[in-house]
Length: 343
Image (cartoon, rainbow, N blue to C red; front, side):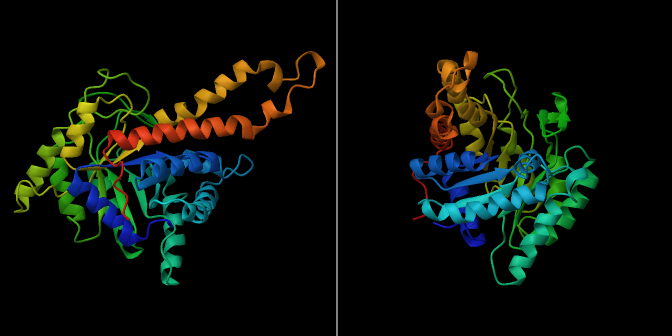
């Protein structure tokens, strides 16, 4: 199947919300990790989301120029070709983009898609994230309003983060404290500024104690039940049924989450869950194992010639791809998206 059209992406999100499951959004930084993500989704028979952060895009652009837009466009174009060979629908998304990188990342990528749509084609990416969590809510929403006008016109879905996620992600750092919980007032102000679909569709990364990085279960105090309060508060304010779930929520900083926490988040409207740390480890772990077990083969020790078959990147790259794909399959199971692909 090809990369999801705007219509298919909207259908994916609608199906997730109605079915109380979510799509893993897998961060990729190379053709290898892209292949691993696609393979995992295909093996799980799940549609899915592949995303590229600003740091990932800079890495993809090559260390000579470190151009984020070039890196993101190149991988997206490659994904459009590659995804046709996989029996699932894949949406392309750009991850966290703070204010100081908007002009060097999201806005130029939006321009690329705008030109494509004007020419009668589909956008290059299906969604873009604006991370204004380091700004005041007023400034955050003002920029979100400007971006929403452009994304809606280009048939793209906007993702917004209105309050901080703890830890560090591509240079954006937030302390782990009581500010990591979105309030009903925050949610109402968001709905007032961005509408509830009437001004363009958007995904909402609300905070319920989320923290980026590596944490064992229990080390982070998550309150996924808070999402129900946000939905109910906004529904009441705008005269909608209290069980209408007006927001499409995104789960950030999910590493180390318990099955119960994930299940509660799904019940309360989460349709997308970002996964990066766990898949990074899954990709790297077999590579480290290979290097340790084949030390004499991957290095020309004491003037020897080593073993070409051992240090050939394809040898350890295949192991890395298989391991990361397996972690994607696991994520699909955790998020209940296994077997839900659109036929």
